[in-house]
Length: 149
Image 1 (cartoon, rainbow, N blue to C red):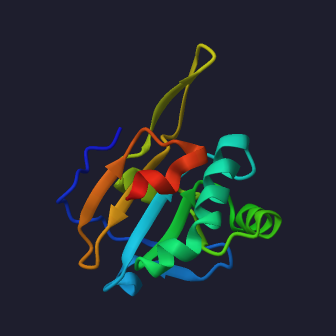
Image 2: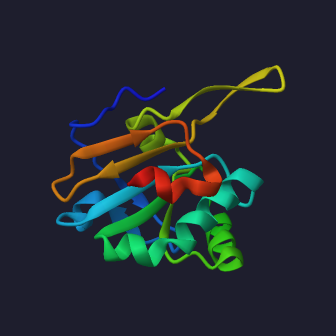
């Protein structure tokens, strides 16, 4: 799992969002960022987490935060997820898992006795200078926004 911790410089990101537009962490300099990694679009836990962030998005924006979601799903899958759940933030299509690997969240998982590789649900709160303020590894999908503060 992740070895990144509070005080570390956030790894750079150069990836595409749901619209195929390049997204770089550099464009968020001067803003705080909630960078959340989740396993898969439109699954119960991931939908609960995204909707919790959506429902609290305006208060997060008021506090100076931008939200970016990351999963290995395709741009097309992200677009459907955004439209279905009315998500107001961008989602990175990390199909090659480079962003997940850079943040140390791609790794071995266990479910119902089976082991497989996947995204370990993790959120990074990044400050205006690109430094990690907080790492949340035990995400409460239904109350995630409360964990950010």
